[in-house]
Length: 263
Length: 267
Image (cartoon, rainbow over all chains, first blue to last red; front, side, top):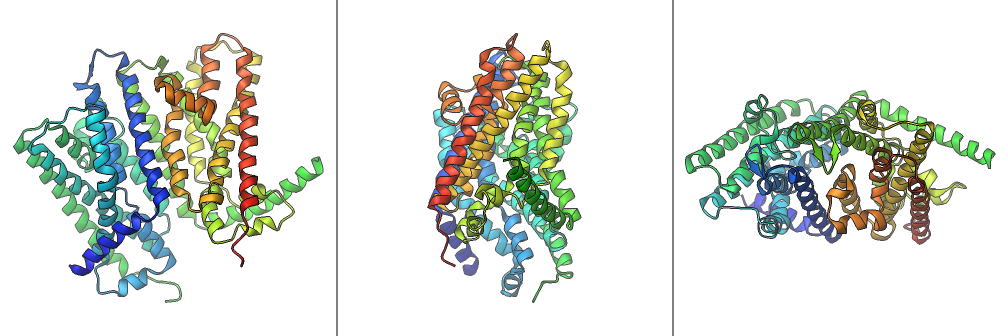
């Protein structure tokens, strides 16, 4: 456990190391929030105040908070893993008495925590207070925090599966592009799920992607009762378990085929 | 002059064909990357589709006008995405000293630096942009004249060169700051998302910045707005090509200042 804690700490400090990177990431998020604000203001300009049962601030909250969550949970774990595989130094990591899945997980966790502290929380406060998004202050905030971690875990485990595919073929960037496009679109992070056609929505709710963005934002806005909220968290936990099992099985299976140049 | 151009073209063809051959040896990688870019652009198109399912217009632009703007933007950035992809690795070539190769050739540094890389996966984006553009075209309420077609082509070139200029200046920051991935991401992933929408929906400060400071407005909004919303060709239409030339010039200037500042790593 101590060994893994050290990795988390290192990644936390390392991601703080590039100050210019950090400033521009924060600026980028700020621009993203403004884009969402103006875009959705224009969308609501001709409406009578609500569209599909969502008011302007709610629709804005869905998109802006989702954007915020995306910057927190996108840790490029699949990319780092794939690079490590194609360079061959994955061997060094496999030699260590550490579990590859767990090591990658805690590395990502370190990055996630830095983002959470230095961009996630400030931006959430900005969205809530500067733009006046109506957030209920109660137990829903605890639900939200838990579900944010769950979103990270779902996202990481999907990334891990994508990264491990680099053991057998080298196109992780392409897969990452497909994965991000599909997830962001189908999870309601770009357009709130309420705007999707009636026939499509039940399908979207069955897919794992809504658990990554729709669930945490919904819990933050606190529109669901406590049993419903707990159910949503359980669904998230279910998806974590599913992706984690799949990733670990896949990883074990594919490791048997590993060849490294010059090993 | 003409001879010189042919010389450059011959070199470009040689370097590029080597790069394409090496990329093509990873067939699966190529296909999946193209699919990735397709997915990215199709999801952008589908977002508009879902949005316009609910609302009739956005900032006064109807569905087809919006798609036309989206397609035009895609076409305007395609040359940079496909031919100028090496900008993304400039920072590492500056840090590791590989850039010095470009300084020893009797060729334009920017030309030589860019000429051995072609981003084939962006052909996927180009395909979607062409499709969206062609799909929206017949639905526009524009009374076409030969002059308008000529102007559209001119404005398109202006847009392309504006974008090249902006990207060149942004990438050249690597000469001063080294690792500039975050700056590149800031512009390409965040700021450039504004450009595919009608400029007027954004707040005044943003509009001013996009017209006068970083002229993103000329990459898509200005030319498309002229074409769709002014009845006839007016002098304003020619602003886009002029801005394109100016911004391209500034971009090259920033680049050459950066190169002059660069002095290798001593290896």
